Length: 110
Image 1 (spheres, helix red, strand yellow):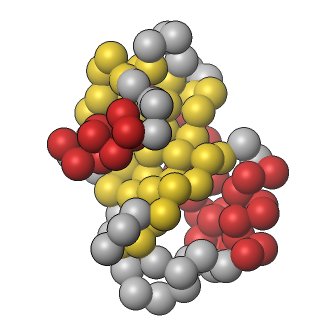
Image 2 (tube, one colour):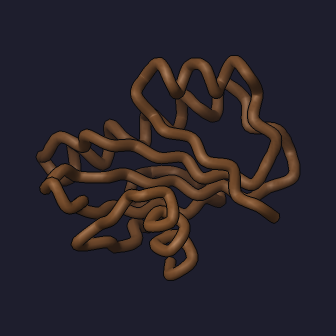
């Protein structure tokens, strides 16, 4: 978690509170890391970290959006900022779709 916080801080995204969320609690069997936090402006943040070798496709991007919606429902609060930190090839259609939905995408070095 420390590396995620440091990476986001390097991008100018600071969170007052930051905690992990188990994907199983959101009904996901994906091998991803999920975090939620509150930024300095008081908005909720949703962070997904994906580390794998195969390409992230549009279908997976839609599943990330579904996890976002499930966490909003579980928290009963609106999550304003969504971030995808990935260490995998990202399909251009998936990237365009996520950016259209308001996600910010960051490639991790690995």
